[in-house]
Image (cartoon, rainbow, N blue to C red; front, side, top):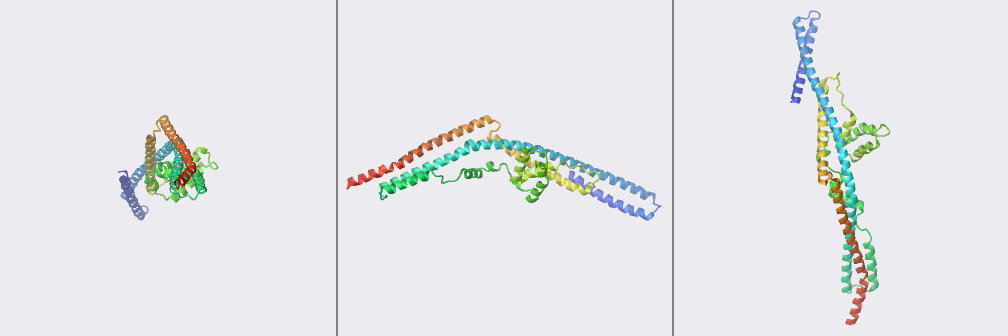
Length: 338
């Protein structure tokens, strides 16, 4: 409805300005003896034009007010978002420390135990089949097997962590949606505007911004999070002043588009906040003591399994080393059979 009203008054202003221009041309033709009716029509049209322009200026003032209100909402949403992401970041660090890292060591222990167990059965079968030329050959394979079983053959912890993040994107870059990569500005233009508006406003060399604020905003820049970059541009661009000396017809469409952009950013920020809150609810962050207890229970279970696997690793290493005795016994049995 507002858009239709604006278009109606814009059309009316254009028509009145044309009418006023024609009347001025007619008035000029009379020089000093301008008929009274022309003066009256001029006065009426001028009044109507002024009223229409005032109405459009009122729309302009309201759009500016709405635009700055949206900016305030964006700033508040950014503060809430950063607070929520800090909560998530802290719990993710605890998750990595208590679950992911022990889980990595458990995975390595299982791999080592499975390798040694499989190698034992393979070498035992070869002994039974008289596939070793002599004891020296067997002992060399035993040493090679035990040595190989002690070396990490699989991915490093960093690679394991990257795989975890690929399997669960929330660990890598949470709560993104398809709109976060759809921008009115291209990424290049957005980055350029971010450098021009935001970085000078937060850098310690050009501002008094606290270091923690700079670090938070700069992290957004490094990740090229287009939504948050756009939100920070809006924040640090400052409030939009209403210009009294500006023809509203010349700037109305521009500020209206800016309002749409601000409202779009505010809506997307809210959607991301809702996503994080849902994640927090899923992680039971509103009950941190319960979450910590659950994490510690899981950690102890993982550590217990690591201990069990370690004992199995020692067992299969002993079994492999004892294959020399099996080989000797098999050889003795063969001689007796002869």
